[in-house]
Length: 190
Ligand SMILES: [Zn+2]
Ligand SMILES: [Zn+2]
Image (tube, rainbow, N blue to C red; front, side, top):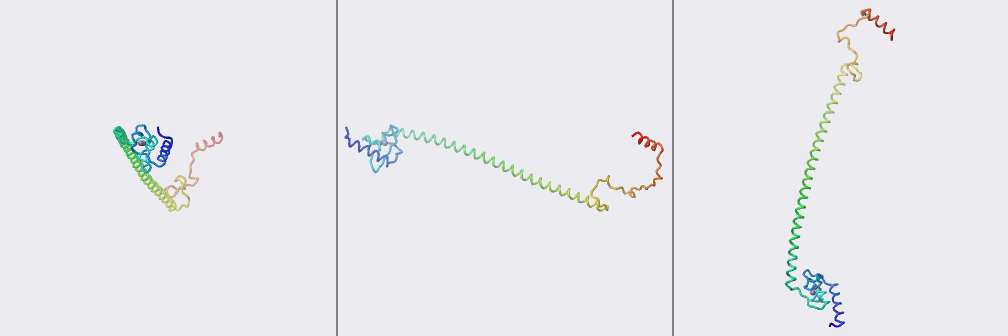
């Protein structure tokens, strides 16, 4: 049966190791079997904190713990490797899709830009043609000596001399009697 003072000392040392030590990657047999975190402070004690407190040997040489650690870690490593490959593949696929979408949209944008440029050129050419046509019409109207603004052909005064017709006096207009009578009856009845 340990003395009261040695129990106190063990507890004291336990807290010191816990406060200043570091968790070991490969736990001692005792901690490993119980799933404890195995904390060691090499400058304070050759035992881990738990083994120090309990006053037993601290060893990490049992074949059982080493074998279990090896198989557990090897399994965990291959699982993570598979996971890593999956993540890489997924990222690669996402990058490919993203790049393809970017390229596609850039191409469409370029095409739309080119079409818009062509369309603008066509429109400006069309406007220039319309303006030239308007200018020609104006010049033609000025050449005929008319200061009148553009008017439709029907509204323009007839150039009688150029028609070849001769102006006749009223006396030259022989109106048939029946037309005169018809006009008279129309105005009466209206
Ligand atoms: Zn331990
Ligand atoms: Zn230990």
